[in-house]
Image (cartoon, rainbow, N blue to C red; front, side, top):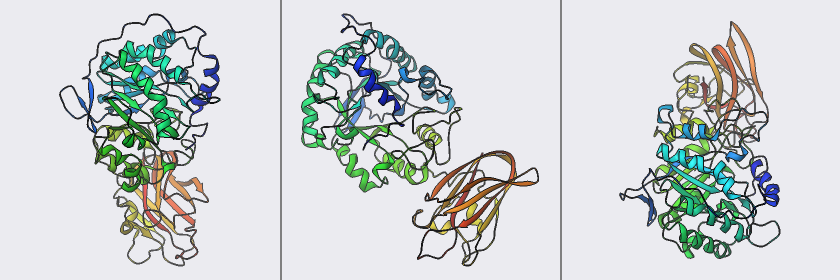
Length: 488
């Protein structure tokens, strides 16, 4: 699973920086003192992580961008890392992260670790202690490991942790993610031989810290730990999941990490999605309805598996905010992750939107699948509008209860969960100020859940005009639409 460079532009920069480092000095002789902990110490117990009182802990939170890369985007209004960590833990703002993952990226064999720690780690450990949350220090390398050309030598990883571990090993808020995403060799036993001495070295100075352990192929091979686990009694295994790996059915997730999690502790330190477009890429293309909802359903049924969503940012894909720091909802992941952290019900954006119950008029109806189904919040096959055979331009108009700003319209179409017969070509229009204006023209669509940006104020009606209802050559040429979800 190769990461495209534009999702991890930060990592592309790492390769260049690794050669030169942040400074040319060797390992500093002394380290600064770490703050005392304010969160209970964590300990692995079977396949659970438990606190000092024996209570099972499901580590749920978000990742932030590596602080040293916070200004990479030249067209984004970047926010300071500290502000984002405050937000992630701010219950009054509706966020309830009990853990934040802090990537550490620009590390080499010659990095001045004292300077790096003082600028990019220590302030955020202090902040986590003040907030009473856990902080994952994530050595965020995405590279081959070993002695091959361009690979990360074991000595480099060991050097980092030999410096960092004694500083924070007694801070109970801190968790160590030892190596984010080793790639090749794609062999668990080879990986274990490489990383076991690093773990042993950490334990000489940080005997009690919870460790998170990745695996080859971008942390997707944790099943190797079942037959040959890393020798450590306070270590959980990491998995990274994105939509390119498939639809998150129980069968798929069981095979990737769920079955293993019945035996060993597992934490998903990366997952995320956004609809196709500028806020996603081939790895992360997915929608809340078709990917986020079933994924959460699985995770809610497996509370012993912790998770940290990628990423609380407005630039790195798949981000939770647009470029102006508006939290993205609908089929984007931002609001869904926020609601999940708050314990809100797991519902598709199709089920809850501003036009639920609004009046809908349609150009034609097939059988009993009326236009009322367009605004009933029901995205089952029974809850669709079907246009009549022979209607060459199926049209639906939704009248809102009052004029409002419409940020986007979710168009949900197809059959059997959206496969096969989604709308291909259509336009969206809005009625404002007594006039209709077209806000989108979609051609060649293949997505069953499409979140169409609008951004118009004073809208009292929304109209869908379909010019190609299906790409199928065997099914009836009719429009099949689950819902028109209007979002303000």
